[in-house]
Amino acid sequence: MNIMHGFPKIVFEFGAVKSLPEELEALGIKRPLIITDKGLVEHGVLDFVRNALDGRNDFALFDDIPENPTIAGVVAALEVYNANDCDGIVALGGGSVLDSGKALRVAATHDGPIIDYLLDASKITKNVAPYITVPTTAGTGAEITFGGGIHPDTNAHSLGIRSVHVKPDTAICDPELTLTLPPLLTAATGMDALGHAIEGFLSNQFNPPVEAIALDAIWRVAAFIERAVADGNDIEARSEMQMAALEGGMAIYMGLGPMHALANAFGDSPLHHGTLVTVSAPAVMRFYENHLDEKLTLIHAAMGLDDGMDIATGIEALNERIGMPASVREMGYDGSDLDTLTQVTIDSHFNAAAPVLPSDEEYRKIVEEVLG
Image 1 (cartoon, one colour):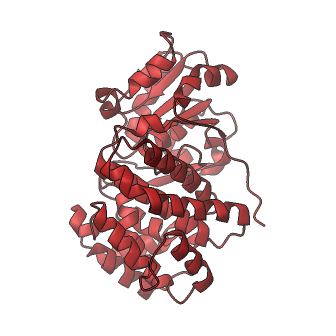
Image 2 (cartoon, rainbow, N blue to C red):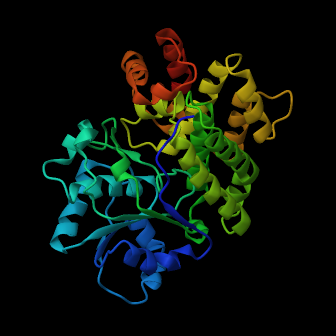
């Protein structure tokens, strides 16, 4: 069995954000920096945190995290952190905000430019700023993971920040904060969770308890994502999708695979990561057919697919029903260098956990199919 370090402390329930003061005290945070994005401020989601803090004003705010996390965004947040003598971080948002917080907790306590720690994670020590995550989407799993992606700039491939020391201290998972998530983001982040669960379950690592969690996440997404997309106020569906996202985050600890290698290859653009993952999924699952029969049978059952429908077709059909695109071209990707895209995919660190690795030529065909 692959023995892994534990998950962060998790608080999960409707109204969980009200526990924020208690969790700040537990970590000794007296003046946190709250990082978020402008959309969450405009839609009133930040108000949940303000209300939870019950009028205390001893916090600073940075609300300019970009849609995809960048070094520039982290540096700008660091300036606010230092200017306000902050002693901890609360990240309120989706994957971009949560991953930015991981880089920020390193930057707040380590000397030198952030890129040094993206290029060499061994330089990251346990001396990091205390960190609480409050996810507002149901999909990335970044609220509990020990890695993330930070782009040197908007149109560059992301660099990984991967260390046990960047794993958040506490994750406050409150499904109520996802009620205002619009349908397309509900769909995209939810299918990202499905990708995490499938790739974690298929990983070449061996850990039956986490594999069981991954299968449960697959079932929850397949059973509830359409309801969450159709009616954002469906409390049961929102709660189930939040749990699926959390379980998908647990599955990430097993390692990911080609779906994420592909998403990263097309990540030299501002396109949404979760959508890139689900657009890549059918081609990867077609490749796996006849390679992983026993595990594919379990995924097929968890998704509730009919006997005559394979997993790839099932994901394509689900994507269509919830409004996801069928190819990267349909998303608006304008790159055309197939050789470079293929090589970036082949070189991706995500391949390390792949149960069956495509050959270079097989990968080229997969990239071409996903490109559309």
